[in-house]
Amino acid sequence: MTRNLTLAALGCLMLASCGTPQEQCISRNTREYRTVANLLQEVEGNLARGYAWEERTVWRPEFDTCSHVVRDKDGNAHIIRRGCWRDVAETERYRVPIDPAVERRKAEGLRLRLTELTPGAEAAVRACRSAYPED
Image (cartoon, rainbow, N blue to C red; front, side, top):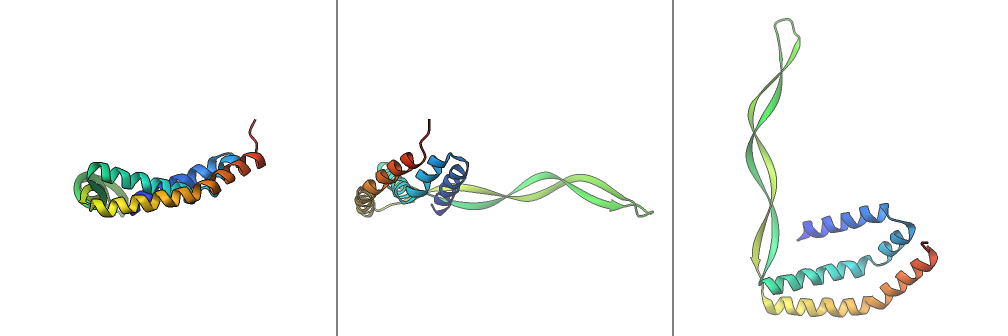
């Protein structure tokens, strides 16, 4: 879950750094609103499925070709390729049971927070559009 939020935040930052001045302004000023909206969407998905998704990193061996430097009797370096085993990190998703009552309370709290944030986010979007008009 933390990894998902981190990736989402990183994606938003990358998008914000590449957007127009208006898009950057909107992104900067609606960050909390978008975060709460994404969390609410995740909680509602958990309720609909009946479980949550978590992620963990697992290491698996993988056969690959490795390069090794060997020196001949004159000291000259030669690269030799041969098969070897390497550990490769993979992200694995797995189901986690939820308590529906807790998730419903969490969703209700997020809905209330989203309602509180909506007027400020709308005002910020209007201000950004007037400050950075796009033709």
